[in-house]
Amino acid sequence: MNIQWFPGHMAKTRRLIAENLKMVDLVVELLDARAPLSSQNPDIEELCGAKPRLLVLNKSDLANQETNEAWLRYFKAQGKTAILFDSVHSKQVKFVADTVRRLLAEQIKRQEERGMKNRSLKLMIVGIPNVGKSAFINRLAGRSAAISGDRPGVTKGKQWIHLGGGLDLLDTPGVLWPKFEDESVGLALAFTGAIKDEIMDTETLAAKLLEHLCDKEADMVSARYKLPTTEFENGFCALEAVAKKRGFIISGGEYDLLRAAGIVLDEFRDAKIGRISLEKPEEEL
Image (cartoon, rainbow, N blue to C red):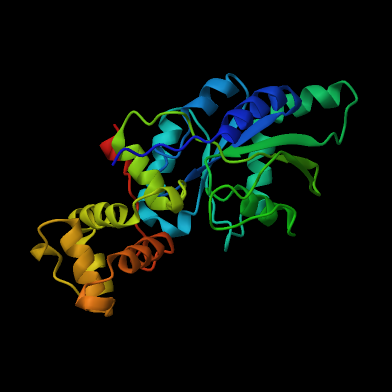
């Protein structure tokens, strides 16, 4: 599948990030814990330059727990600071604030020496679409301060959110990059919902996902759909088997592959198949 999605507002968001960088002390980049490398926008690295940055592996409750820990070790070995977060259940709000202050300790000390005590720290929140930026902000704020949703493209413009504890957050719309050089990157982003389903051939996408899962997580697929995963010639055969098992039949007795595709994608994204990581750091070392 040749997956690309870069509507005009994303180019505007890229300019917005560049223009506002000088106003913030630190960039918080949210990654999808299920695919940390595919969800890391290379343009962000280029834009941020030497600006202090915190990587947040969000939706960590949807990813494999051992793989989550392996990713933390991977980024630490690269000299980067990364933490795990789950915007739905996480109790790590204080940990996030403490980590930010630790990363900015020298800057805070210099400001205090110049008499600038209790100055609010300004953070910019960035990431790809549907990575959970708004939900992350709402968790930190303890209120519905940012509009959130389980689909890409909810945040439309920049938005400053003032928190207690001396933190100000600048929310920005999700932004991808103009071209995915590696097809696996586009697939990982489509699987996790960073690319709008409306522009996708969801039957082919779900078939691709089932091919991957039957290869890497066969036991989970078998348990969820009560299917012998070794018997499928390809992903479409697996998708048809899911439709048959769920009783998705349309006129003429054909199986409703479109409905089955929606179910497979939703159940993967909600971790109903299981806590699955699409990428593992040992594959990158």
